[in-house]
Image (cartoon, rainbow, N blue to C red):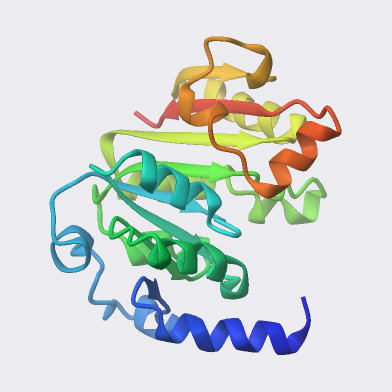
Length: 224
């Protein structure tokens, strides 16, 4: 994407009512007003709150919002030029139950309060295979502790990825910590029992992986 196009999208994001772009400082110093108040002040209902971390173009957040009108969805990504597409689609289709936040995912426990979140989706994250990049892997123990903090007691996490490495790494961590794995499969499209929301929604990159006959893996788990 050219820099002109990026700038145009950044400017448009600033006009979108469903895009929240907090300053890093206000998030860190505890003055971010929506923390603990997402349902009351933003969505203005008490419906369950679902996050998509590293939401990319926002396809999953938008598709889930269409399918589950009784839930609120928030896509989070630091790259606003990417989720511009999802935000624009949501506005065009008048989806009031989906929003997008431009922020780093490691600030999740500063953006949301303890027990504020009902569900988390992690869709096609960078597996960060190199050892030096482990700290950026979205299912490492540090991240899992942050998720546990913001999730309700029985809150659910979904990990959908084309990376066998990420799938195996995460399963190993979950079993090692004796966390509850509700469902796991290394090729969801070959299994008729895969949950509907896993196989009925496909991102742009996922379609490419499927064309290349790459298996798509999935884990559904709790951090109790």
